[in-house]
Length: 336
Image (cartoon, rainbow, N blue to C red; front, side, top):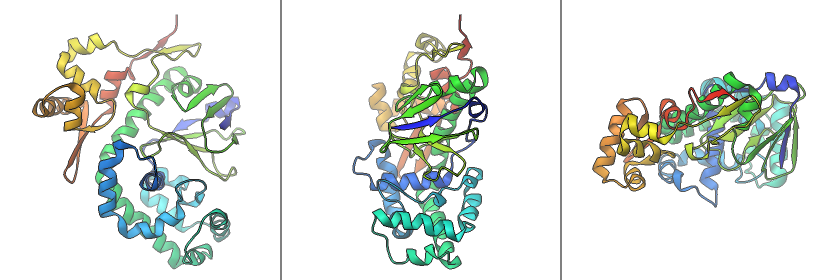
Protein backbone atom coordinates (compact mmCIF):
# COMPACT_ATOMS: atom_id res chain seq x y z
CA UNK A 1 0.00 0.00 0.00
CA UNK A 2 1.21 3.49 -0.90
CA UNK A 3 0.16 6.31 1.42
CA UNK A 4 0.78 9.93 0.38
CA UNK A 5 0.41 12.27 3.36
CA UNK A 6 -0.81 15.81 2.66
CA UNK A 7 -0.86 19.01 4.71
CA UNK A 8 -3.07 21.95 3.76
CA UNK A 9 -0.16 23.65 1.99
CA UNK A 10 0.48 20.47 -0.01
CA UNK A 11 -3.01 20.63 -1.51
CA UNK A 12 -2.35 24.21 -2.56
CA UNK A 13 0.93 23.18 -4.17
CA UNK A 14 -0.35 20.06 -5.93
CA UNK A 15 -0.39 20.34 -9.71
CA UNK A 16 -0.67 18.19 -12.81
CA UNK A 17 2.12 17.97 -15.37
CA UNK A 18 1.37 20.06 -18.46
CA UNK A 19 2.39 17.39 -20.99
CA UNK A 20 3.59 13.77 -21.19
CA UNK A 21 6.97 13.25 -19.57
CA UNK A 22 9.18 11.54 -22.20
CA UNK A 23 11.64 9.95 -19.79
CA UNK A 24 8.89 8.53 -17.59
CA UNK A 25 7.19 7.18 -20.73
CA UNK A 26 10.49 5.63 -21.85
CA UNK A 27 11.09 3.89 -18.54
CA UNK A 28 7.51 2.69 -18.12
CA UNK A 29 7.30 1.50 -21.73
CA UNK A 30 10.40 -0.60 -21.05
CA UNK A 31 8.46 -2.15 -18.17
CA UNK A 32 5.68 -2.98 -20.62
CA UNK A 33 8.11 -4.66 -23.02
CA UNK A 34 9.25 -6.96 -20.22
CA UNK A 35 5.91 -7.55 -18.51
CA UNK A 36 4.63 -11.11 -18.21
CA UNK A 37 1.01 -9.87 -18.00
CA UNK A 38 0.82 -7.93 -21.23
CA UNK A 39 -1.92 -5.42 -21.87
CA UNK A 40 -3.66 -6.31 -25.16
CA UNK A 41 -4.16 -2.61 -25.92
CA UNK A 42 -0.37 -2.25 -26.24
CA UNK A 43 0.11 -5.16 -28.66
CA UNK A 44 0.48 -3.04 -31.85
CA UNK A 45 2.94 -0.70 -30.14
CA UNK A 46 4.87 -3.63 -28.65
CA UNK A 47 5.32 -5.22 -32.08
CA UNK A 48 6.52 -1.90 -33.47
CA UNK A 49 8.97 -1.36 -30.58
CA UNK A 50 10.37 -4.89 -30.89
CA UNK A 51 11.06 -4.34 -34.61
CA UNK A 52 12.45 -0.83 -34.46
CA UNK A 53 13.96 -0.40 -31.01
CA UNK A 54 16.32 -3.37 -30.44
CA UNK A 55 19.54 -1.33 -30.74
CA UNK A 56 19.26 0.73 -27.53
CA UNK A 57 17.40 -1.98 -25.58
CA UNK A 58 20.62 -3.80 -24.75
CA UNK A 59 21.76 -0.79 -22.76
CA UNK A 60 18.43 0.30 -21.30
CA UNK A 61 16.73 -2.93 -20.20
CA UNK A 62 19.38 -3.85 -17.55
CA UNK A 63 18.72 -0.49 -15.88
CA UNK A 64 14.95 -1.02 -15.74
CA UNK A 65 14.04 -4.41 -14.24
CA UNK A 66 10.54 -5.72 -14.77
CA UNK A 67 9.81 -5.29 -11.07
CA UNK A 68 11.23 -3.34 -8.19
CA UNK A 69 13.77 -0.57 -8.04
CA UNK A 70 15.17 1.40 -10.97
CA UNK A 71 17.45 4.46 -10.64
CA UNK A 72 15.69 7.76 -10.01
CA UNK A 73 18.24 9.66 -12.11
CA UNK A 74 16.62 8.15 -15.24
CA UNK A 75 13.52 10.29 -14.65
CA UNK A 76 14.68 13.80 -13.66
CA UNK A 77 12.09 16.50 -13.04
CA UNK A 78 13.52 18.54 -15.95
CA UNK A 79 12.03 16.00 -18.34
CA UNK A 80 8.59 17.56 -17.90
CA UNK A 81 9.89 20.36 -20.16
CA UNK A 82 10.81 17.92 -22.93
CA UNK A 83 13.21 15.17 -23.90
CA UNK A 84 16.18 17.46 -24.51
CA UNK A 85 15.90 19.04 -21.07
CA UNK A 86 15.55 15.61 -19.48
CA UNK A 87 18.64 14.23 -21.22
CA UNK A 88 20.67 17.27 -20.16
CA UNK A 89 19.64 16.58 -16.57
CA UNK A 90 20.69 12.92 -16.91
CA UNK A 91 24.08 14.00 -18.26
CA UNK A 92 24.59 16.39 -15.35
CA UNK A 93 23.66 13.91 -12.60
CA UNK A 94 26.24 14.09 -9.78
CA UNK A 95 28.66 11.16 -9.79
CA UNK A 96 27.92 10.24 -6.18
CA UNK A 97 24.21 9.95 -6.89
CA UNK A 98 24.77 7.73 -9.93
CA UNK A 99 27.04 5.44 -7.94
CA UNK A 100 24.59 5.23 -5.03
CA UNK A 101 21.59 4.42 -7.23
CA UNK A 102 23.40 1.89 -9.42
CA UNK A 103 24.77 0.16 -6.31
CA UNK A 104 21.22 -0.18 -5.04
CA UNK A 105 20.12 -1.56 -8.42
CA UNK A 106 22.95 -4.11 -8.43
CA UNK A 107 22.02 -5.31 -4.94
CA UNK A 108 18.89 -6.99 -6.26
CA UNK A 109 19.64 -7.49 -9.95
CA UNK A 110 22.32 -8.83 -12.25
CA UNK A 111 23.83 -5.84 -14.05
CA UNK A 112 26.34 -5.89 -16.92
CA UNK A 113 29.96 -4.93 -16.33
CA UNK A 114 29.68 -1.76 -18.42
CA UNK A 115 27.58 -0.17 -15.66
CA UNK A 116 30.79 0.19 -13.66
CA UNK A 117 31.97 3.00 -15.92
CA UNK A 118 28.53 4.58 -15.63
CA UNK A 119 28.72 4.28 -11.82
CA UNK A 120 32.07 6.04 -11.93
CA UNK A 121 30.43 8.95 -13.73
CA UNK A 122 32.50 8.61 -16.89
CA UNK A 123 31.25 11.30 -19.31
CA UNK A 124 31.49 8.91 -22.28
CA UNK A 125 29.31 6.34 -20.49
CA UNK A 126 26.72 9.00 -19.66
CA UNK A 127 26.69 10.18 -23.29
CA UNK A 128 26.12 6.59 -24.46
CA UNK A 129 23.20 6.29 -22.03
CA UNK A 130 21.69 9.58 -23.21
CA UNK A 131 22.14 8.45 -26.80
CA UNK A 132 20.38 5.16 -26.09
CA UNK A 133 17.48 6.96 -24.43
CA UNK A 134 17.08 9.30 -27.40
CA UNK A 135 17.43 6.50 -29.96
CA UNK A 136 14.80 4.39 -28.19
CA UNK A 137 12.45 7.37 -27.92
CA UNK A 138 12.84 8.23 -31.60
CA UNK A 139 12.34 4.65 -32.79
CA UNK A 140 9.75 3.26 -30.36
CA UNK A 141 7.82 6.25 -28.98
CA UNK A 142 8.03 9.19 -31.38
CA UNK A 143 5.75 7.60 -34.05
CA UNK A 144 3.07 7.12 -31.39
CA UNK A 145 3.67 10.41 -29.58
CA UNK A 146 0.58 12.23 -30.96
CA UNK A 147 -1.56 9.34 -29.76
CA UNK A 148 0.19 9.24 -26.35
CA UNK A 149 -0.14 13.01 -26.01
CA UNK A 150 -3.84 12.93 -26.85
CA UNK A 151 -4.55 10.35 -24.16
CA UNK A 152 -2.50 12.22 -21.55
CA UNK A 153 -4.08 15.57 -22.44
CA UNK A 154 -7.58 14.08 -22.23
CA UNK A 155 -6.87 12.87 -18.72
CA UNK A 156 -5.17 16.12 -17.75
CA UNK A 157 -8.13 18.12 -19.04
CA UNK A 158 -10.45 16.25 -16.70
CA UNK A 159 -8.20 16.73 -13.65
CA UNK A 160 -7.29 20.37 -14.21
CA UNK A 161 -10.88 21.39 -14.89
CA UNK A 162 -12.02 19.76 -11.67
CA UNK A 163 -9.16 21.31 -9.70
CA UNK A 164 -9.87 24.76 -11.14
CA UNK A 165 -13.57 24.61 -10.35
CA UNK A 166 -13.60 22.68 -7.07
CA UNK A 167 -10.04 22.49 -5.72
CA UNK A 168 -7.34 19.88 -5.28
CA UNK A 169 -9.43 17.89 -2.81
CA UNK A 170 -12.12 17.33 -5.45
CA UNK A 171 -9.52 16.57 -8.12
CA UNK A 172 -7.91 13.87 -5.99
CA UNK A 173 -11.32 12.23 -5.65
CA UNK A 174 -11.53 11.84 -9.43
CA UNK A 175 -8.56 9.47 -9.37
CA UNK A 176 -10.19 6.08 -9.83
CA UNK A 177 -8.80 2.67 -8.87
CA UNK A 178 -6.20 2.00 -7.58
CA UNK A 179 -6.52 5.28 -5.62
CA UNK A 180 -8.60 6.21 -2.60
CA UNK A 181 -8.59 9.73 -1.19
CA UNK A 182 -9.18 9.75 2.56
CA UNK A 183 -8.07 13.22 3.64
CA UNK A 184 -5.34 13.93 4.43
CA UNK A 185 -4.00 10.67 2.92
CA UNK A 186 -4.10 9.44 -0.67
CA UNK A 187 -3.90 5.64 -0.71
CA UNK A 188 -3.15 3.35 -3.63
CA UNK A 189 -2.40 -0.29 -4.26
CA UNK A 190 1.37 -0.66 -4.46
CA UNK A 191 3.90 -3.52 -4.67
CA UNK A 192 5.44 -2.57 -1.30
CA UNK A 193 4.29 -0.79 1.84
CA UNK A 194 5.34 2.84 1.46
CA UNK A 195 4.67 6.23 3.07
CA UNK A 196 5.40 9.43 1.15
CA UNK A 197 5.25 12.51 3.37
CA UNK A 198 4.99 15.71 1.37
CA UNK A 199 5.79 18.04 4.29
CA UNK A 200 4.65 21.18 2.51
CA UNK A 201 6.46 20.48 -0.78
CA UNK A 202 3.29 19.72 -2.75
CA UNK A 203 2.95 16.96 -5.33
CA UNK A 204 3.42 16.80 -9.07
CA UNK A 205 0.93 14.38 -10.63
CA UNK A 206 2.16 12.95 -13.93
CA UNK A 207 -0.46 11.18 -16.07
CA UNK A 208 1.25 8.44 -18.09
CA UNK A 209 0.11 6.30 -20.98
CA UNK A 210 2.53 3.47 -20.26
CA UNK A 211 1.90 3.41 -16.52
CA UNK A 212 -0.54 0.51 -16.04
CA UNK A 213 -2.48 -0.73 -13.00
CA UNK A 214 -0.32 0.79 -10.24
CA UNK A 215 1.21 4.26 -9.78
CA UNK A 216 4.94 4.95 -9.41
CA UNK A 217 6.83 7.27 -7.06
CA UNK A 218 10.51 8.12 -6.75
CA UNK A 219 12.52 6.03 -4.35
CA UNK A 220 14.49 8.99 -2.99
CA UNK A 221 12.17 10.89 -0.66
CA UNK A 222 14.50 13.93 -0.64
CA UNK A 223 13.65 14.65 -4.28
CA UNK A 224 10.66 16.78 -5.24
CA UNK A 225 7.62 14.50 -4.80
CA UNK A 226 6.23 13.00 -8.02
CA UNK A 227 3.35 10.57 -8.46
CA UNK A 228 3.04 8.96 -11.89
CA UNK A 229 -0.38 7.42 -12.48
CA UNK A 230 -2.19 5.60 -15.31
CA UNK A 231 -4.28 7.80 -17.59
CA UNK A 232 -7.97 7.17 -17.19
CA UNK A 233 -10.25 5.59 -19.73
CA UNK A 234 -13.65 7.19 -20.12
CA UNK A 235 -15.36 4.11 -18.70
CA UNK A 236 -13.51 4.39 -15.39
CA UNK A 237 -14.03 8.12 -14.80
CA UNK A 238 -16.24 8.35 -11.71
CA UNK A 239 -19.91 9.01 -12.43
CA UNK A 240 -20.25 11.12 -9.35
CA UNK A 241 -17.70 12.93 -7.24
CA UNK A 242 -19.07 13.59 -3.79
CA UNK A 243 -16.66 16.10 -2.35
CA UNK A 244 -18.92 18.24 -0.19
CA UNK A 245 -18.63 21.29 -2.46
CA UNK A 246 -19.04 19.95 -5.98
CA UNK A 247 -20.45 17.09 -7.99
CA UNK A 248 -18.90 15.72 -11.18
CA UNK A 249 -21.82 14.92 -13.49
CA UNK A 250 -21.34 13.19 -16.90
CA UNK A 251 -23.48 14.27 -19.81
CA UNK A 252 -26.54 12.12 -20.40
CA UNK A 253 -26.17 9.80 -23.39
CA UNK A 254 -29.53 10.96 -24.82
CA UNK A 255 -27.99 14.38 -25.41
CA UNK A 256 -25.23 12.82 -27.48
CA UNK A 257 -27.78 10.88 -29.51
CA UNK A 258 -29.63 14.11 -30.27
CA UNK A 259 -26.45 15.98 -31.12
CA UNK A 260 -24.59 13.38 -33.17
CA UNK A 261 -27.20 10.81 -34.08
CA UNK A 262 -27.54 7.44 -32.39
CA UNK A 263 -24.99 5.60 -34.55
CA UNK A 264 -22.27 8.26 -34.42
CA UNK A 265 -22.79 8.74 -30.69
CA UNK A 266 -22.31 4.99 -30.34
CA UNK A 267 -19.03 5.22 -32.25
CA UNK A 268 -17.83 8.02 -29.96
CA UNK A 269 -18.89 5.97 -26.94
CA UNK A 270 -17.00 2.95 -28.31
CA UNK A 271 -13.76 4.97 -28.19
CA UNK A 272 -13.56 4.71 -24.40
CA UNK A 273 -10.16 3.10 -25.10
CA UNK A 274 -8.03 3.81 -28.16
CA UNK A 275 -8.45 1.15 -30.83
CA UNK A 276 -8.00 0.26 -34.48
CA UNK A 277 -10.77 0.72 -37.04
CA UNK A 278 -11.50 -3.01 -36.95
CA UNK A 279 -11.79 -2.97 -33.18
CA UNK A 280 -13.99 0.12 -33.34
CA UNK A 281 -16.31 -1.59 -35.83
CA UNK A 282 -16.63 -4.62 -33.54
CA UNK A 283 -17.37 -2.50 -30.48
CA UNK A 284 -19.95 -0.37 -32.29
CA UNK A 285 -21.52 -3.27 -34.18
CA UNK A 286 -20.77 -1.75 -37.60
CA UNK A 287 -19.07 -2.71 -40.82
CA UNK A 288 -15.41 -1.66 -40.93
CA UNK A 289 -16.11 0.77 -43.79
CA UNK A 290 -18.94 2.40 -41.84
CA UNK A 291 -16.82 2.66 -38.67
CA UNK A 292 -14.05 4.29 -40.70
CA UNK A 293 -16.49 6.81 -42.19
CA UNK A 294 -17.88 7.80 -38.78
CA UNK A 295 -14.37 8.06 -37.31
CA UNK A 296 -13.43 10.41 -40.15
CA UNK A 297 -16.40 12.69 -39.44
CA UNK A 298 -15.60 12.72 -35.71
CA UNK A 299 -11.96 13.48 -36.48
CA UNK A 300 -12.94 16.40 -38.73
CA UNK A 301 -15.06 17.70 -35.83
CA UNK A 302 -12.05 17.59 -33.52
CA UNK A 303 -13.48 14.84 -31.31
CA UNK A 304 -11.15 12.04 -32.37
CA UNK A 305 -7.49 11.88 -33.37
CA UNK A 306 -6.10 9.19 -35.65
CA UNK A 307 -2.48 8.07 -35.73
CA UNK A 308 -0.89 5.70 -38.23
CA UNK A 309 1.96 3.58 -36.85
CA UNK A 310 3.35 1.60 -39.78
CA UNK A 311 0.44 -0.55 -40.93
CA UNK A 312 -1.72 0.10 -37.88
CA UNK A 313 -4.24 2.96 -37.63
CA UNK A 314 -5.46 3.81 -34.15
CA UNK A 315 -8.19 6.20 -33.02
CA UNK A 316 -8.40 7.96 -29.67
CA UNK A 317 -10.57 10.63 -28.11
CA UNK A 318 -9.24 14.18 -28.09
CA UNK A 319 -9.71 16.31 -24.95
CA UNK A 320 -12.80 17.78 -26.62
CA UNK A 321 -14.13 14.31 -27.37
CA UNK A 322 -13.53 13.18 -23.81
CA UNK A 323 -15.21 16.32 -22.50
CA UNK A 324 -18.27 15.71 -24.69
CA UNK A 325 -18.49 12.04 -23.74
CA UNK A 326 -17.48 12.22 -20.10
CA UNK A 327 -18.58 15.71 -19.15
CA UNK A 328 -15.10 17.00 -18.42
CA UNK A 329 -15.97 20.54 -19.52
CA UNK A 330 -18.90 22.27 -17.92
CA UNK A 331 -19.50 19.20 -15.78
CA UNK A 332 -18.61 20.47 -12.35
CA UNK A 333 -21.43 22.38 -10.74
CA UNK A 334 -22.11 23.53 -7.25
CA UNK A 335 -23.80 20.88 -5.18
CA UNK A 336 -27.27 21.63 -3.91
